[in-house]
Length: 489
Image (cartoon, rainbow, N blue to C red; front, side, top):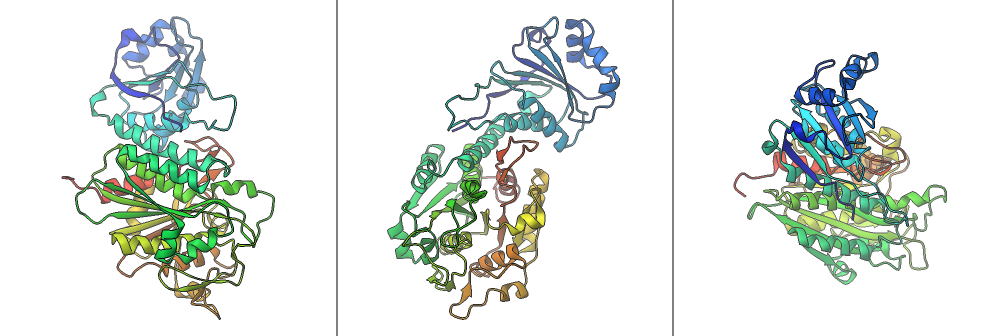
């Protein structure tokens, strides 16, 4: 799996700048002004830094913009990257600046002269997250990345371990979502999660026989057309004694053909990412374990493959969920909600969670409504929902609350069963959420995140190359840190 670049924070040592290898980055907090590190660089480069800071191009720079001086005189470094970043720049600008540097990170490494800039942690996170490449299926691998060293005023105050844990969790999610389906089968996915025991997580895998005994007829109906066995993986992080856990539930459809309701051929290759919800849950659980979070969190993922075959579920079939409700399957391509509903019910029955968040690349309708800028957020609890939205905003991960209501729920009425699995074209993402809400107990605060538009992108984003983004790991880690951690765990 992909690992983040080695990161360290150091006290400023001006004498080591001249011999630094790779790239040297200078953060300039005020246009035209130089701190001690800038003055040392300016002297070594015979005035090149001063000329750059006095130029019209740098005067017009926006926070986070980078100007590069290649093969500078007086240094062993191959380049100097000069970044305009105000002392009190907002988080977005700091991470953008870091990402610009991370995109240039090479084998020889990077030395960052942060000076008085306050958001050095955000600069560092931007560097780590952008310096990612997925090469598992390529014969020519990405060049290895050198170390990232950041010189700042108070290096001891930076939680380097937490930064690295967050990046590692996001990379784990990205790797899983980027994997092709012939590699990341349900069995391989479960094995990757079992390997997380090394981080301190408790991991168990429920096989088809156990799922049948539990009554998970909805989940099993999705995978019955595939040769890959359906599974549910339970990951527990126990960092807060006997407190009831927060539950995270992920849709893990490792490939979605649509089943008998077959998808069009064009773009079907993208359905390797239909396990994005499970990938995000896995990344969050890894992050929590690596940073030793003082919280109890359980992550549950339903792993299935939706394939057409002589044994596949047909449109018009009626299946029985673990809750006991019957579902008329109108469209076998609305399979994610069938997986989630059984795992959600199991989570509530077994763990009695203080709150429950499910994540799924659930509907194309949410992309029509929100594009690729925001995930759709649905909830039965204003306070819990507000906590998540605050966490997402704090981490710069787009999230927008969507409505629920009885009129939408009425679209799920079935003539032959307790409900249908789809409610028609109008408000498709909302009726999907209404379906899931039927499997939420009254006493359980619940959030549904439809991440179909944000889990994987066709173009690069600020913090990620094109492909899997790892959206949600930062927001959910922040949700846990701000609302569910104890002080004495």
